[in-house]
Length: 236
Picture 1 (cartoon, rainbow, N blue to C red):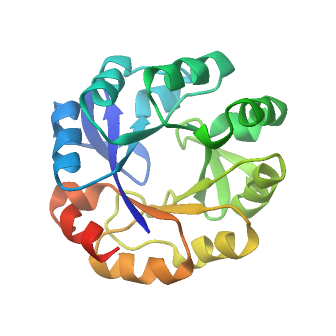
Picture 2: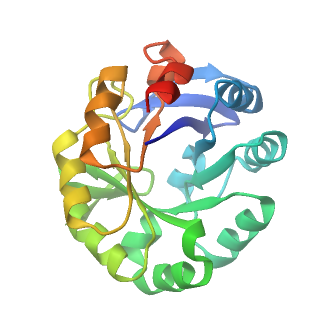
C-alpha cells in the first residue's frame, strides 16, 4: 500500500481544511516547496497535491507553487483542483505532473472525461469526493445526484485506470477513514482505489491495508504529528 502525503494549496500556502469547509482553514506552512521536500526526505515516492483555489474557481490558481514542487522534488506528483479542460491536462503533464486528477468534470462532462482518459491513459485519475455517499463537486461546495459507487462504476466503464475516494465528512477531522464505503468501492471495481479522508493513526493504515486499497493519502495527521510519515511508510 502506497503511503501518499498530501499538500493542499490555498493562496500559495500549505493549508488544511476541516470537512472541506473553506472557512475552517489552518495554515501549516507558507513554503509548500519546503514542505514537499520534508515529505520527500521522510521517504515518500508520491505526493498528493490539491489546488483548493482551483477547485473552487474551476481554473488552476496556484501555478507557481505547483511548478516549484514539481521542479524541485523527485517525487511523482498527482494534482487535482479545478482541472476541467483537455489543454490544461496536457500542460500539466508536460510540466511534469505524473497524474492529473479529474473531479467535477467527471461528473458534469462524461464525454470530455472519456476523451481525456483515452488520450492520456494512466496519467488520469478520477477523484471521487463524497458526502453521505453522494458525490460533491466544485471544491466540495455542491452536491451531485450521483453516488460514489455509481460514478466509480461509470468512470471504470469509460476507461479510468484508478480512483481516489475521499469521504469529505472525515477529511481533516482526525477521526478515522470510512472503511465500509472504501471497501464497497474496492469490491465493486476492477481498478485500483486510493483511500483518503480521516486517516489519523498507524492503526488506521493497518485496517485499510487488508481492504485492498492501492494507496492511502494522509494530510492533517502528518502536520499535527499524529502520524510519522517514515513510520507509516515502513509498515505499509
